[in-house]
Image (cartoon, rainbow, N blue to C red; front, side):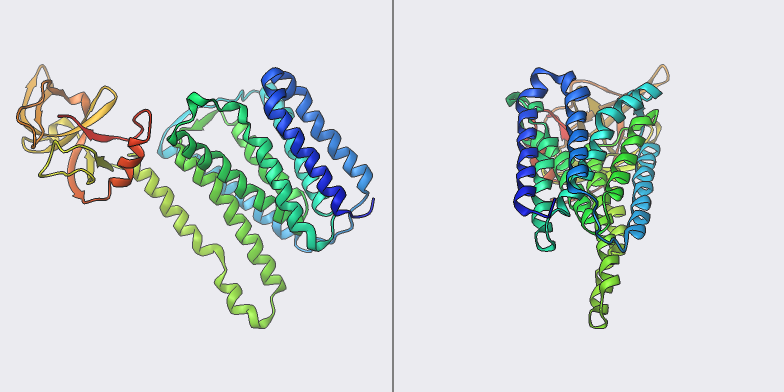
Length: 393
């Protein structure tokens, strides 16, 4: 078959319609049949048809070896980041079945689809002339994203402002980043780098017996930033290969190495925010501690033992469903356990219940004005508390 823009767009529309049908009908009515039979066979058969009908592709890929090398490094960085996250935060039980049968099942359900989809991406992009490759890459990426969003997972009752933010950050933006990367590698190298990246990262998630309990925002950053950095490295390398002397300074300025420290700082900031380190920030959301802590301030909490707390210290302690930051006005010990009486500086009376040492999270060591307003805004749009905020009357 000769290269044809119209035929290629027609195939993308066919894929798009399949995705709509799968989301609206097949998944809801025949969930297991769709997952185990229909979806894998659809992609495998379509890939075979394209291989037979389009014939051999003679596009020369001059930097294929280098792109694969960069991809392997990115995969190792991905796995290492997750392992470090688990070591610093905590590990939990992997939700996937990690025995041999489970890995084989997951490979059949998802692995075969990954291989077929990336082969199809490569063949369709190269089934048009050079000037149309980007258009085909964009259209096919949109189709793939729509297919993988799985609209049937969403119901009216689950859609809240926080839920939308999480889904966009944790699913849609990473899918966009990966499609940018995979389309670029399909144009400049072939289908192998995309298959390696998706398949090996998924195999790690399918087979590891313990799974990092990373917060969703960290997962969103890992799943988005690593593909984007890989894309920038491949683009930088390709431009460097193609550069002429007049562009040498510009190419050096585009080197993405400078992004790596920024990404590391962002991940460290997230670890700090969720309390992995001995100190953590807490947004102040009520006025019970004015004139010491105002709404919108961020209190920096240092983890400590009950023995380290003195009268006059401002402590954070756990209540059912929320935390409180109040001042200690009395400390006593009974049967080897410390008890604290607390009071908000702006309140007329002490808190009704004593605080046990098991409830103590830490004490305030200093504050930052106004920095907590974004966290308070996010808290207000949530249906359930998702951040630790100062509360209490």
